[in-house]
Length: 440
Figure 1 (cartoon, rainbow, N blue to C red):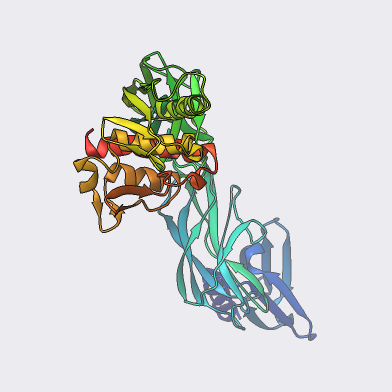
Figure 2 (figure 1 turned 30 degrees about the vertical axis):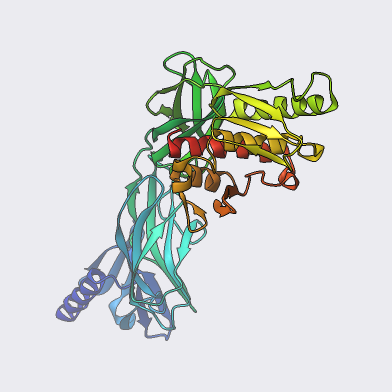
């Protein structure tokens, strides 16, 4: 009997070692006593080898007469569930990390769901954040997303079949800390008159999904901050961005720099300076051909004043234009840095026609350098082409029609093109860009 019981105890110890889940004590009276292996503290033989004593973790002891025991069996109460392992966490940054799942066994039925779950508390379950993989591979790497920087998380794999859900090992990890973003001031260039085009670039977000803001700040002091004048661009993520700033006064030096803000704070790009210069185009009316107070004089003065406003506000030209009247001119005409003339048709005594002829006076369609950029019906000057693309997305065309060179759109070649003040503004900006291309 003693030998038999020693062997019995050895089997029980062997079974416990290999993590069976339940000890079943089959008694001779046909009843079965079930004891969880995880609840057992120790086993011993007592009463002169006549009893089997089971001491539980709560220190209670149950004694079974050996003569009452028919047999002992062992069972695994979760053997029908999947068996999974959690892949250790790597690729840890502020907002994401990578873990994964290994399906060791699907259990007693096929796996219907699998993935990883995570939480800021230990032992996460599928009731917490999770990623359910649509794949069926045995081993899968999966990403945790929408995490918070400088935070400790717990993650483990899970798998579900008909009999329930089981989990793998729990791993803990801490996301990296957020940092200040990085922004550069790429360029600040004169866009005509008081306006400047500013380009910046955010090369690092500091780990945040979304900025509080990004844009430019400017001042007459050498180190502008958010306490000065600010133009806000957007809360888009990384990359290049541009904005136009209209300054209040000409011939004053302004300092501009990019900025961006995330949850840690604000950083600035390099400071660049710009001195906006208004155009200084003027005109002189030939009062011998356009007497002061005449109907034609009054129409021409209104048209010229309006044209000068747009050219001087949105371009940087200077010079004085001689304006005359000749009844033989069918419409209007302008020569390169010479004069502009109008005939008797008052339809053309309009700001759109005046701006068109001023463009000829400045060199559009009349200078050799301008004509060299008109190739196969397309204007190829890079500054003007890029400007129109940025303003409207359109292509800039040009032609030689009966030795009259024009560009469009926004060339104001017909009065019908003058549909809004914006057309005049774009026209002046384009001619100013052609000035850069042609080096007038």
